[in-house]
Length: 386
Image 1: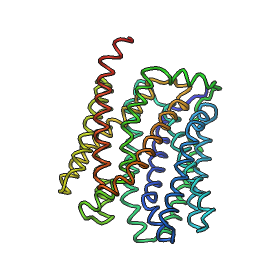
Image 2: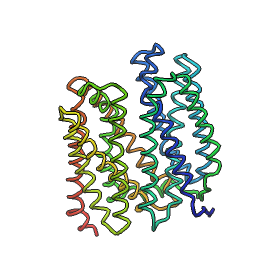
Image 3: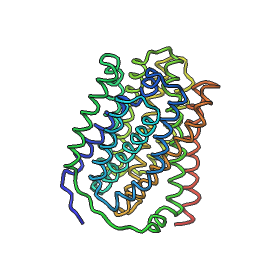
Image 4: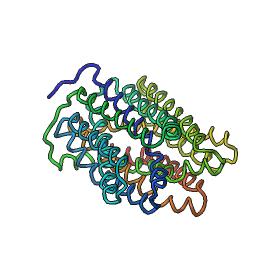
């Protein structure tokens, strides 16, 4: 088994947050970019859909590969694929080539996220895992916040081409930095061992809760920015500030509850709190007519999200065998991608037809449903199987 260094989590946190920053500089504006280049809504759906399909197809193989091969090598290749994506959309308007390039983009992003998560799960100190996971998630959220704010400003003031060139330069630097990531141990794992890990009552119920919770990711992807923009008549710069400002509270929720768990607080109670607050916050956020009240309830929702995302990552570290955590954690990632994709497919037309508040309201209710199911399972099912 290969050893990892004492401070082996510092570089993964830095690379994860930097990559998220780079991603959020531009991805939010991809539809606008494509329209400005003369493409139709059909093309936008085709390109982004292909990126999503590649993510779904490659998630489990990527996770298993991280158990069998060095994660740092897979991360390096993933960054190369991301560079190909940004270089491609900068230099071609050919529909067929762009379709292939967006597939490279989906592959690169998914490989990176699966691999950096797997590497992190393998190097965390079990005794300090709540705080270390919290730092990892907080770094990711900070990267997203600055990406939202700076991306729109950069495109508006410097244009798409210079922004994309800057992104490519940053990705080259991140690629070189990835060569210094810690080396994680590898093991040849048979597929039936993953099946044994996943197909038990507790893990499958954990998967159900994750599925219900991440439905709201798809609702947000189709309706969040449009709801804020149209409901409160805000410009895109103000929409970016609204989203970024609320995301600060995601970091607060994540760090606060990680510290509570580190001091001995019951992680199950964090799950309860997270689902209730996330759900209520989403419901109340979606029915406001005043921007400041809406923002306040959005912040409440983000506190719940921060606690819940920490709970999911902490749950992965606690329930899965470290030797197979790449494949097992990728299964949770696959559930997240499927859930958000299904929700986006349903809520995209629903929001357009009945109002962009409705997908947000409905998925707030599914979070409350997840809490009710979790509470029942913990009180009625688990005691009988203990």
